Image 1 (cartoon, rainbow, N blue to C red):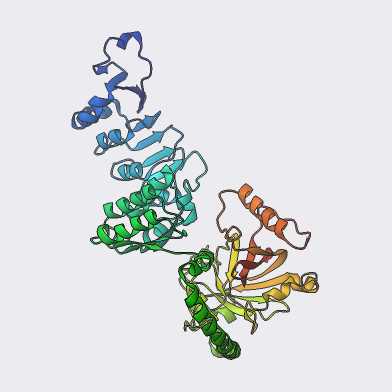
Image 2: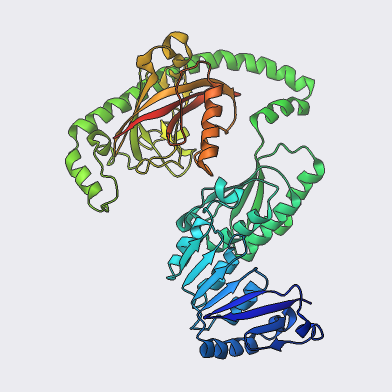
Length: 523
């Protein structure tokens, strides 16, 4: 049993665990003590007598004109927030313990009459959440993402938590990850898909339990692991068969292309292989003919789209479109100024810019949607198209320019469309030409020029497509990593204030072509 000491100091109650009792209290460990300016209660008494405690503190706060409660530690903090829930005099809460404010505590504060909170730190979305209820928050430490889960999914705003449909979860989960996922499920209304990196039964059971707790239904959990363990496979099948009926929560396995390649022939006998070899020979002959025709038709299709885009720019009343786009903007918002890009909004409202790379065929409007999959198979006119289109990472912003703008496109090297000529940049005579080292990116709001500082070919990885940084030190470390990979020293120095542009496309199934450039101007 623990003792809780409550001191009355001016207009405040100071609440802390009483580690060492004074001589006055040594013989009363199993009782509760009240003196003129100190109160001692057992934790059991507080937990079991909240109504009595609430009435007692109601009178005490009135008599002593108390408006502030100060917690030296978070011991019994939830219980005391319940006790002070209906107390209209206590409006200030100060938490001295150097630990983050949890969402469960945040909810209890919201349900009370507290108007001002001072704490060590909390997550950005909680500030927005409490602000809706008129509660001011002061943090004594830098406000950061507290868990990998929040950082990975860019959940820095309440609206992000509310509308998110697709999330990533790196297993195993930390305790903070679990707390944040619980808060996410309580707030979110549109979740459809969870991507996890491996099978961890404890974590998967936690995820399922949390989804059911908040009545989440029709959820797919995609497991990105090459599973060949029979016990694990049976566990997933059994869950899908028996446990998922009511809530329609299902596991789905997403094997890598490399794994499929390595294992497909293990399940095929020699006679089938022999038959397939003859069939493949015929297919190869037919494929050469089809590929030639497909490349030619793809090139003509893209060229036709570009011609139509030029006509749209010439015909559209861009001044009216710009006026409409700027009509509802606040004073601090950037205004739309680029007429060519604005004139394309009526054709594709997801148009965000125009990219040009010198001495390549890359000269396209850039689009952005809610994920990085749609424009792999759809063109500028939102039609299904194997060429896809040039698109920006869904996490990027162009009005408040992101630290790392990332632009992707297919490498259609056989016909030169999309990023099919980006590989030209890997010739020595190309990347040593100063004219080619400047990349132009026009957005709705400004004309940007980026100077290349790194160019390389690398095996498939996602470590260079980072868009958020915990601090400037991490960002500068990231920039130095990109520079060190370059096949050529461009003698460009970067600082933690710089913003960069990344172009990424496939070199083949196992490698990527990547170019990084640093922003020269922002006008």
